[in-house]
Length: 169
Image (tube, rainbow, N blue to C red; front, side, top):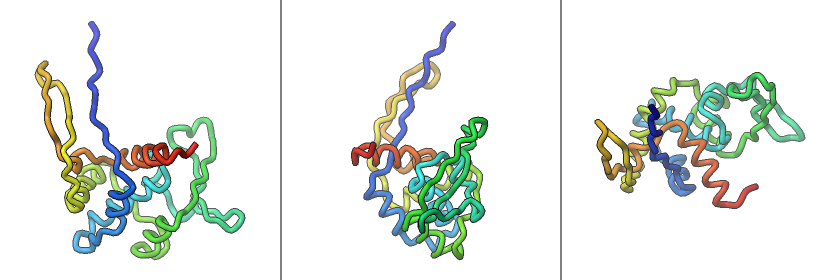
């Protein structure tokens, strides 16, 4: 027998929503601030959570006066292809403001996924998104607030979607 794949609803955050996230004062909620910072570094680098969540000061190199993260992606580890992601002003801002020039300590994927939704709620990302899924063999149609659909991979999806919309090659 064959089981049909479930169609999932994956969202991306707009540049405006990401800027709002970057500027939001979450100092009253240290865990949410930490999760937000890791998520934004994922967005600014466009990397998978398995890569951006584990970057460290040791991965920083300078080439022609520009700082980069230099690493091998975990998914492509066997190929050994080196990736260099520029350290943008926004990344540097996060590193300097709260981590004394370092990167935020890594958190588990589950911790990021559980708490990034609360960051979205703080930002009032309540736009309703149509979601369809099967439960007990029945098709369920539901309208879900956007913040409930944010997960660690939304950082990479947001990077790709926003760069595509800007017609970046």
